[in-house]
Image (cartoon, rainbow, N blue to C red; front, side):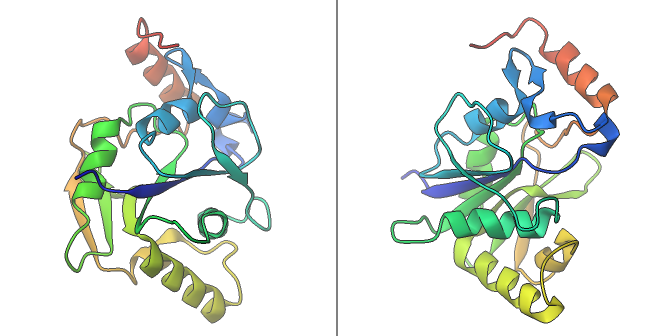
Length: 203
Protein backbone atom coordinates (compact mmCIF):
# COMPACT_ATOMS: atom_id res chain seq x y z
CA UNK A 1 0.00 0.00 0.00
CA UNK A 2 1.35 3.39 -1.00
CA UNK A 3 2.06 5.76 1.87
CA UNK A 4 -0.06 8.91 1.81
CA UNK A 5 1.89 12.09 2.36
CA UNK A 6 1.73 15.82 1.85
CA UNK A 7 4.75 17.89 0.82
CA UNK A 8 6.17 21.24 1.87
CA UNK A 9 8.87 22.67 -0.38
CA UNK A 10 10.86 25.61 0.97
CA UNK A 11 11.61 27.96 -1.92
CA UNK A 12 12.33 31.27 -0.23
CA UNK A 13 15.60 32.54 1.14
CA UNK A 14 17.92 35.24 -0.13
CA UNK A 15 20.44 33.02 -2.00
CA UNK A 16 23.22 35.36 -0.89
CA UNK A 17 25.97 33.10 -2.20
CA UNK A 18 24.29 33.31 -5.60
CA UNK A 19 24.11 37.08 -5.53
CA UNK A 20 20.41 37.12 -4.70
CA UNK A 21 19.45 35.14 -7.82
CA UNK A 22 16.06 33.41 -7.75
CA UNK A 23 17.66 30.03 -7.08
CA UNK A 24 14.56 27.78 -7.36
CA UNK A 25 13.93 29.21 -10.85
CA UNK A 26 17.41 28.38 -12.16
CA UNK A 27 17.33 25.88 -15.05
CA UNK A 28 19.27 22.66 -14.50
CA UNK A 29 18.98 19.74 -16.90
CA UNK A 30 16.12 21.28 -18.82
CA UNK A 31 13.94 22.05 -15.79
CA UNK A 32 14.09 24.55 -12.97
CA UNK A 33 15.46 23.40 -9.65
CA UNK A 34 11.98 23.82 -8.17
CA UNK A 35 10.35 21.71 -10.87
CA UNK A 36 12.91 18.96 -10.34
CA UNK A 37 12.01 18.80 -6.64
CA UNK A 38 8.28 18.95 -7.39
CA UNK A 39 8.66 16.00 -9.79
CA UNK A 40 10.32 13.99 -7.02
CA UNK A 41 7.36 14.53 -4.68
CA UNK A 42 4.67 14.33 -7.37
CA UNK A 43 3.03 11.51 -5.40
CA UNK A 44 2.03 13.87 -2.61
CA UNK A 45 -1.65 14.32 -1.84
CA UNK A 46 -1.11 18.09 -1.56
CA UNK A 47 2.01 20.17 -2.17
CA UNK A 48 2.69 23.59 -0.70
CA UNK A 49 5.56 25.75 -1.90
CA UNK A 50 6.71 28.40 0.54
CA UNK A 51 8.15 31.34 -1.35
CA UNK A 52 7.38 33.82 -4.12
CA UNK A 53 4.99 32.53 -6.79
CA UNK A 54 6.71 31.21 -9.90
CA UNK A 55 5.60 29.21 -12.92
CA UNK A 56 5.65 25.47 -12.14
CA UNK A 57 5.06 22.38 -14.24
CA UNK A 58 2.83 20.82 -11.56
CA UNK A 59 -0.04 22.42 -9.65
CA UNK A 60 0.86 23.54 -6.12
CA UNK A 61 -0.43 25.72 -3.32
CA UNK A 62 1.56 28.83 -2.48
CA UNK A 63 2.22 30.57 0.80
CA UNK A 64 4.83 32.87 2.35
CA UNK A 65 6.48 32.85 5.74
CA UNK A 66 5.96 35.78 8.07
CA UNK A 67 8.14 37.74 8.06
CA UNK A 68 9.53 37.00 4.62
CA UNK A 69 13.11 35.82 4.97
CA UNK A 70 12.56 34.78 8.56
CA UNK A 71 14.30 31.45 8.10
CA UNK A 72 13.37 27.80 7.69
CA UNK A 73 11.23 27.44 10.82
CA UNK A 74 8.79 30.26 9.94
CA UNK A 75 8.71 28.89 6.40
CA UNK A 76 7.93 25.39 7.61
CA UNK A 77 5.24 26.74 9.94
CA UNK A 78 3.66 28.59 7.01
CA UNK A 79 3.72 25.47 4.88
CA UNK A 80 2.06 23.40 7.57
CA UNK A 81 -0.49 26.15 8.08
CA UNK A 82 -1.42 25.98 4.41
CA UNK A 83 -2.02 22.24 4.83
CA UNK A 84 -4.33 22.67 7.83
CA UNK A 85 -7.84 21.32 7.60
CA UNK A 86 -9.56 18.01 6.94
CA UNK A 87 -8.13 15.40 4.64
CA UNK A 88 -4.49 15.93 5.48
CA UNK A 89 -2.00 13.09 5.37
CA UNK A 90 -0.33 11.78 8.51
CA UNK A 91 3.08 12.31 6.94
CA UNK A 92 4.64 15.39 5.41
CA UNK A 93 7.77 15.42 3.28
CA UNK A 94 9.85 18.56 3.83
CA UNK A 95 12.21 19.47 1.02
CA UNK A 96 14.49 22.31 0.05
CA UNK A 97 13.91 23.59 -3.48
CA UNK A 98 17.55 23.29 -4.54
CA UNK A 99 18.04 19.51 -4.74
CA UNK A 100 18.67 18.76 -8.43
CA UNK A 101 19.24 15.02 -7.98
CA UNK A 102 16.32 14.25 -5.69
CA UNK A 103 14.13 11.48 -7.11
CA UNK A 104 10.78 9.89 -6.38
CA UNK A 105 12.43 6.66 -5.12
CA UNK A 106 14.32 8.67 -2.50
CA UNK A 107 11.10 10.31 -1.33
CA UNK A 108 9.47 6.87 -1.17
CA UNK A 109 12.39 5.56 0.89
CA UNK A 110 11.90 8.40 3.38
CA UNK A 111 8.16 7.90 3.80
CA UNK A 112 8.50 4.12 3.97
CA UNK A 113 10.99 4.36 6.83
CA UNK A 114 8.61 6.44 8.95
CA UNK A 115 7.02 3.83 11.22
CA UNK A 116 6.72 2.71 14.82
CA UNK A 117 7.65 5.35 17.38
CA UNK A 118 9.66 7.36 14.88
CA UNK A 119 8.45 10.93 14.28
CA UNK A 120 10.82 11.80 11.47
CA UNK A 121 13.23 10.28 8.95
CA UNK A 122 16.15 12.40 7.79
CA UNK A 123 18.32 11.74 4.77
CA UNK A 124 22.03 11.64 5.55
CA UNK A 125 24.58 12.72 2.97
CA UNK A 126 27.76 10.95 1.98
CA UNK A 127 29.56 12.57 4.92
CA UNK A 128 26.98 11.32 7.42
CA UNK A 129 25.40 14.73 7.97
CA UNK A 130 21.67 14.91 8.58
CA UNK A 131 19.53 16.77 6.05
CA UNK A 132 16.39 18.05 7.84
CA UNK A 133 15.20 19.61 4.56
CA UNK A 134 15.30 16.25 2.81
CA UNK A 135 13.11 14.40 5.26
CA UNK A 136 9.72 12.93 6.11
CA UNK A 137 7.93 13.70 9.36
CA UNK A 138 4.71 12.80 11.11
CA UNK A 139 2.60 15.89 10.60
CA UNK A 140 1.11 16.32 14.06
CA UNK A 141 4.35 15.99 16.10
CA UNK A 142 5.93 18.48 13.70
CA UNK A 143 3.09 20.95 14.25
CA UNK A 144 3.28 20.41 18.02
CA UNK A 145 6.98 21.07 18.35
CA UNK A 146 6.91 24.11 16.07
CA UNK A 147 4.11 25.59 18.18
CA UNK A 148 6.02 24.89 21.39
CA UNK A 149 9.18 26.48 20.02
CA UNK A 150 7.26 29.56 18.97
CA UNK A 151 5.74 29.90 22.41
CA UNK A 152 9.04 29.30 24.18
CA UNK A 153 11.04 31.79 22.10
CA UNK A 154 8.34 34.35 21.40
CA UNK A 155 8.41 33.52 17.71
CA UNK A 156 10.26 31.44 15.17
CA UNK A 157 12.21 34.04 13.21
CA UNK A 158 15.88 33.22 12.97
CA UNK A 159 15.70 30.02 15.01
CA UNK A 160 17.84 27.12 13.69
CA UNK A 161 16.23 23.92 12.49
CA UNK A 162 18.26 21.90 15.01
CA UNK A 163 16.02 23.22 17.78
CA UNK A 164 13.12 21.48 16.09
CA UNK A 165 14.84 18.23 15.21
CA UNK A 166 16.26 17.95 18.74
CA UNK A 167 12.69 17.60 20.08
CA UNK A 168 11.58 14.85 17.70
CA UNK A 169 12.16 11.10 17.76
CA UNK A 170 14.18 10.72 14.58
CA UNK A 171 15.82 8.04 12.55
CA UNK A 172 18.13 8.40 9.58
CA UNK A 173 18.62 6.69 6.24
CA UNK A 174 21.60 6.89 3.95
CA UNK A 175 21.04 8.64 0.66
CA UNK A 176 19.86 5.72 -1.52
CA UNK A 177 21.19 7.31 -4.71
CA UNK A 178 24.25 9.01 -3.25
CA UNK A 179 23.24 12.28 -4.89
CA UNK A 180 19.82 13.26 -3.55
CA UNK A 181 21.20 15.47 -0.77
CA UNK A 182 23.41 17.50 -3.13
CA UNK A 183 22.17 21.09 -2.95
CA UNK A 184 22.97 24.14 -5.06
CA UNK A 185 24.29 26.75 -2.64
CA UNK A 186 26.92 28.30 -4.93
CA UNK A 187 27.45 28.91 -8.62
CA UNK A 188 30.02 26.10 -8.59
CA UNK A 189 27.27 23.77 -7.32
CA UNK A 190 24.91 24.94 -10.05
CA UNK A 191 27.60 24.44 -12.70
CA UNK A 192 28.39 20.95 -11.40
CA UNK A 193 24.71 19.96 -11.46
CA UNK A 194 24.27 21.32 -14.98
CA UNK A 195 27.33 19.44 -16.19
CA UNK A 196 26.14 16.16 -14.71
CA UNK A 197 22.65 16.57 -16.14
CA UNK A 198 23.75 17.75 -19.57
CA UNK A 199 22.00 15.74 -22.23
CA UNK A 200 19.09 14.79 -19.97
CA UNK A 201 16.74 17.51 -21.12
CA UNK A 202 13.36 16.50 -19.71
CA UNK A 203 10.28 18.42 -20.92
